[in-house]
Length: 184
Length: 245
Image (cartoon, each protein chain N blue to C red):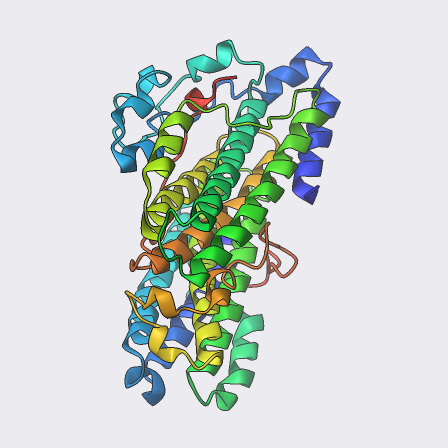
C-alpha cells in the first residue's frame, strides 16, 4: 500500500505540474520557472513509474490515480490560482508532503530495496521544495528577474541563501498514512 | 536530541552488554558499507586524498559501494557495525561545520573577494544545521558508551583543508561545499539500506533530504540546475574506510 500511496502522490504532482505548465502566466512567463516545471514533471513521472514497478513486482496493482486527500485540496485551490506565486505555493505543499511521506516510509518498510527507493526519492522532492521556497521568496520580494540560471548572485537577497532549508531534520508529521492512496 | 537519534541511542544501549546484540548491530552479511574515494577528493582531483586509507576503493572511481564484505578498517576501529556508520556521519558533519567556519573566517578576512549576501547566510545557516546533525549523532555514540567525535578523523581532511585554503573566491568555496553536501546526502542514503537499527535508518532518512536541499541551493548559487538527478545516487557517498579512529 505504501508504494501505491507514493505513486498516487506522484500522479497528483504530475497532474498539477502539467496543468500549471498550460497556464498563460507560466507558459508565457519566466522561462526558468517554466523549465523547472517541465523537468520536475518528468522527474515525478519517473518516480511514479518506479513506485508502480515496485508495487507490481511485489504482486500488487499499479496506482494510476491521484492521492485522494490532496486531490481534494488541489481541486479546492485551483480556482484561486491567479499567478506564479499561487502555483509555487501549491507545488511547495505537494513536494513537502511527498518528501515527508517518503522520509517516513523509509523507516517503516523492512525491505532494503524499498528503503533505498523511498530514500532516493525523498531528497529529490526536498530539492524541489528548496528550489521552490527560494523562488517563492524572490517572487515575494519583487526579484523575479533573479529567477534565472545562472542568476545574478551579487543581487540575490541574503534570505535567498537560507530560505530553502528551514529544518535541520526533515519532518514527517505531515506524512501520508500508508493506506491513503492505496488502490481500492 | 533528534527523536530518531534518541531511539537509536536506546537501541544501542539495550544491546550493548549482550554479545548477540553487538552482533546484531554489525552489518554482518549485509553488503558492506561504502568504498571509494570521498566525493570531495574525486571532485577536486586531489589524488592524494584517497590513497592512504581506501585500498579497496581503487576499483570504483566515483566511490562505488563494494559488492560484498565488511570494510577492513572496521576491524581495528573502536566503532563497529552501525556505530561505525554513526562515527562516519559525525565526522562528516564536523567536517562540514569546520569547512563553513573556515570559509566564513576567510570571507571576513577578505580572502574570498566580495562575498554575496546570500552565500553568507547560506553558510551560516547550513553550518548550524550540520552542528545539529553532529550533536544528534554524537549523542548516539556517547549513549552507546563510545567517545564523542569532536574533530574530523577522516583521511580526506588534509585534502579538504588544502582545497579550502587555496580557495580565493566565494564560488570556489561553494563548489567545495557542494561536494561535501553531496557526499553527506549520498552517505546517508546508503546508510538507510545498510544499517540495521531502526533509529539509525530514521535518523539518516531525516538528514539526507536536508543535505540534498543544501546541495540544491548551492547548485543554484553556482549557476547549475538545482535538482540534477531523478533519484539521488550514491556514487559520491563516503566510505567508513575514510575514518581514522
